[in-house]
Image 1 (cartoon, rainbow, N blue to C red):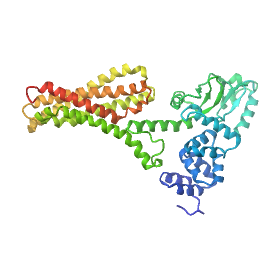
Image 2 (spheres, rainbow, N blue to C red):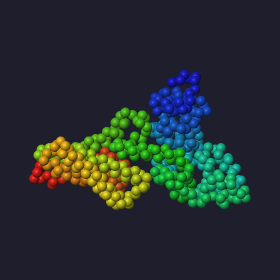
Image 3 (cartoon, one colour):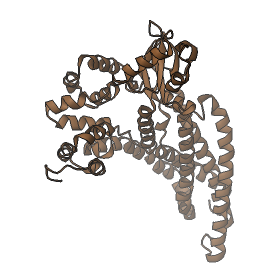
Image 4 (cartoon, rainbow, N blue to C red):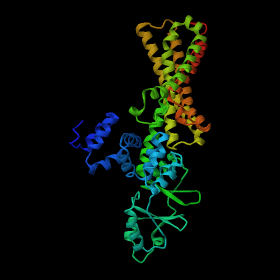
Length: 439
């Protein structure tokens, strides 16, 4: 770390930040020039801001809490232990404290919890010159954005929106009502953050007004707020699909035992479930004893089904998250995945059959009934891949229908499910095709 008398550049600190200990982060932050310290602090995640604030002195903490806009201050407070919320709120001025308390009353993943209550507002009867003058005064009050002004009546109902460009281009004699755009895209204060992110993606907006049930405007959600939300949601889904609980924090910020706890739960479930594979194997131990060659292809069979199931569940989970697929589309997905499973199974089964026949021709590896073994493996792969594809595609729909997160249909869970059923399909096919020969 540089000597205390030597300032460091914010880019240097930003590059080193993920690997620095808390004490080193504080020392580095204090070495930033005042001109860049604000930008650096505001660029940090809420978890990092909270950690930094905890390590600063009370006077420093007050300064930096007051730099944050209300929505960011609420995020920081939610990142702190509950017992520190009141003390952190007390650092804010009266106006900001009231705004933050309103935001904290909303669910963390609701539009109301994401919004900033500071925005530019104008009245419909204002002249263009009056609106521009009023906008200039509000711009000095730390509003979130001045690119658009929201037109409200005396009871704060949202009537329309007018852009800064429209105000500058309008004739001076016109009023705001003459140039405003009515029926703007809005979001309810209790809307989930995933729905808000989809609105941004669909309409390409920089900000969306948040309204209550009576149409009164409560604040705005900006695109930079929703970018972090999208990243958090995607990270959470990926972690769940990987077969673990969501971490809810950066990797290095999660304690060792917390990390173990979040990973151990699903591993235990999968381990116990995988024991059913041994149960299924014991059910067919007589067949395996009479035809040892069948055991050679068990890994091939169960991995084919598990892989196809993992593919399908990953595709459907992501499609549901993006609303490319909805719950009512389950029948269309079933038909599509059934056909996909049959085609993929036929391709893999043909390759498996050809490989066995080729090795038999070259090395005589599988005995006199190699052709029947090859057909058994080929048909089993066809059945297992089809079943795995259907299982992986339908499980997210079942979970969504029951009110659970479809991402809980993790790829390892689907693979384990298909492992057990794949063995049943394989040995049942073997009993039918090899009876009277190897069995």
